[in-house]
Image 1 (cartoon, rainbow, N blue to C red):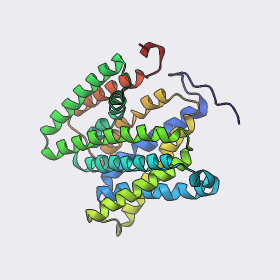
Image 2 (image 1 turned 30 degrees about the horizontal axis):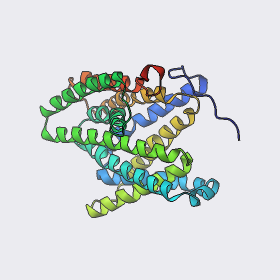
Image 3 (image 1 turned 30 degrees about the vertical axis):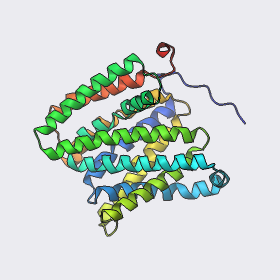
Image 4 (image 1 turned 90 degrees about the horizontal axis):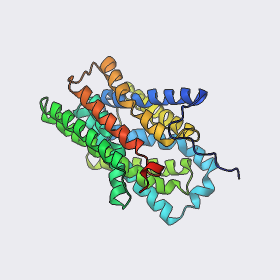
Length: 305
């Protein structure tokens, strides 16, 4: 077994191919919210097919290359993977509907509060949160209040969308927190298959209980669902996983924040969806606050008591 590669420095500039891969990944995930907003299908059905297609895409590879690991998982690993999949389903079940109710810019900015929720979850678990992170949370919370205040002037529907996006950010943080425990002993491919599979089943159950349409869509809708899976679900996040071997998690987390302006630009050009002017400085406040939280990375010397 080869020794693990040394951990990259926190904000070291990515080189050559990694920079290209990260640029492609950011562009790919930036198409997610506009595609969802433009897809003529129920929100839960969109979330279901996104994860179902992802499961089908990765399934053959896992069965060929990781079958022994898959069959040999401990009961704890399986249980945590199931919990993670349910949390991912709750993330999609809240965030995807938010895109039908509020603007792409507001929704993507508010769901980007995931690192803040992760810090609060860590604090609830007894971990110390650096003072800098609390400062970032205050900045981001100010932005959240401004976005919600702007959307109040539009409609109650937009405010509900804002709240759903915030809740979606919380469930995303909980999903990552639980998933990190599984990833300590389980490969990315095996974990992804289990998580996506459970998520798809949970969302299918929600569709059936809510009597939402899951088939019979137009060819245009199916094409958008496939593009959503290939782009954001597989290409975007998969490329981030590739460069994570050489680029720090902190830098990747900061770069992922570019999804919000990218998605807003695509939504404006493609969907003609231009939110009120007040949303943009408020969204900038949210992203700056989240960036400050990410920079206050636990475990650095400055964060030690």
